[in-house]
Image 1 (tube, rainbow, N blue to C red):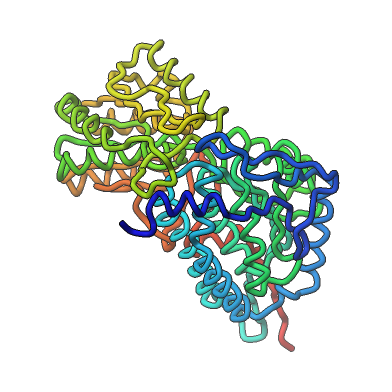
Image 2: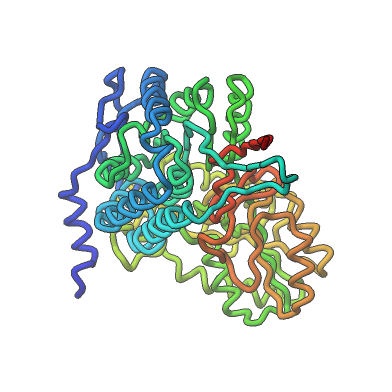
Length: 498
């Protein structure tokens, strides 16, 4: 048996040292109020550590440190090649500590350890390294001018960036903000979710060890309605970036308007359609992908394919294939590398998912599989993946983001109806199309209002492709060189040559 088995991870979990303090101006410190809150593992509901309960006073100290570091130029004015070297060293340290970080991620929010390593850590490393390599390859511009003038278009760092990141992919979502923000020369205040702050806190020490100057990266754990609000209203923060719910994204935009009109970039909710035509290249593969699209990460994914649109002529056949595929997604101990469905992040989310399952039944949807609370580990939060068929797109389970493994199967008769159903949502984050018809694939991809459209696959793309949404799924883009536009200001400098 490989050393990286359940026993290995359980032993590491028993001996791991966990830091819970805030990180400001290059050092770990307690919150000004000396208060803490409990970090509790959803695996078995045991306390992991005390975490600093940051408030307005902590925000003020962190913003001051970030502003001073930015104005000093120690990072913001460093040569791009220098910032690149430091960020690459940062990535190397993350890789050296990958098991520790993956374990913290799993203990903190309940995802399977295999996913923490293969998805979250791998994606984090790719993002930091890609952003580092990109920064000295993004050029400014010279405008076409007469001989006696010189016009320059330059991209300058925004200044102080506050990044509020979610609990479902704590490390990877943080990297999507930190990579381009730091590469561009900004100073950053990272606010992790109170549900899963531990990897962000650990990350700060690795950043310092890599050579990121004091004050350039600060981490403030705490509750969104307190420390998140303090950052959003702060008059000396230039840019606010956020991944989370649409409701919170809207509130952050209000706070920006009430304060200093700081730039606000958000990646918000989704209710993504996964559209399967009868001429899909391989219905078995499509069914496997459809199951993974809503079961992966316990369904706690903004792009989860939670609306499965199936052409009417293959409805019964395809639903049977999906149900059979879902049977392979079984909740288990997240520390077991064989587990593919972990724990729900906390009791609040656990109750929310179960409530939506009850609503689906009450509104007349047919329960095809799952829908039950299970307990592979005592006192943990686990729910079996759930498939509802005979769903109307007006039902709550088809319209509202549940953030759990709950699938709504909806039938359609033709392309026009499929597009109408797909777009009948306030969101526009992602969509999938399964067809062998090349023209249909192109027409559907153009017609669907979503930031990412995947054809004959689910969740395609990498760091070279932008990620973000239409409509109430947010604005701006993470990943690719397009992400740098969120962290830079464009300046036009026009000179008269005598």
